Amino acid sequence: MPGTANDRPDVTVVDSGDSLLRVSGLYRRRADGTWQYDGARPGPDWHAHGYFPRSLLVVVGGALARVLVWKRRWRHVETGRTCHSRPPDDPPRLRSSSLVVATLLWAWLAGGAGLQHAQDRLPRAAGSPEWPSERTLLRWLHRCCSAALAIQQAVRLAILEKSEPRPVERLFPGGLPPPAELLRRRWQDPPLVDCLWRALALAWHGAPMLSTPVAILLAEARGRWEGPLDCPIP
Image (cartoon, helix red, strand yellow):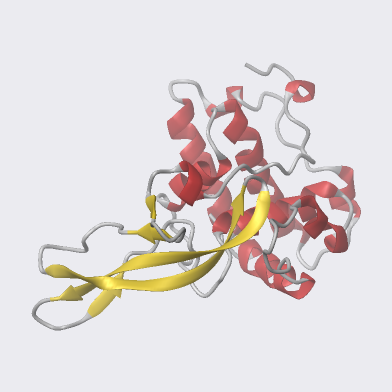
């Protein structure tokens, strides 16, 4: 177990592993190479009602790639209402998985090289689309900062459950001080950016210490989520 701050992984490391569809067993690979997510039946009066496709930007083999995910649709017998099963790494109104959002924001906040270089830390798979634009990353940062404390708490709870009976403080005995480069930059709301950095640092430090993929840790944090439903992470 790490004993000092110097024993912990480098905070600038951006290796996030694979997205949830590759590491969780929650998705099924179809014969045509696309992915399928069935989820859980909403209740006894809901029947399976086919699938619909969703294009999602994910991380595969440490590189950015776009995949097609078929999500299960459900229909209520009495009312005819429909809904669908949403994977835990599929943020509403985004075409990028939560791991992509978290990885690029972590590369930006922890990398010290600025927004224009954050995308360089996550290579693209052959034939994949361009990275999310700088403007998109700014929007992500704004949405995540508004829920930074909730994100930090959700990630911490996920780590607590996995680290029991050890207190989470024993995983981070030296704390998680933000890098000087982060503090020197001019942010619109520095305390919220600092809080978001700590939330992401918990994920990137905690995952390897617990031998857990970052995507799994974020998904488990989403299961404890009490913040806005449209937040891109966790």
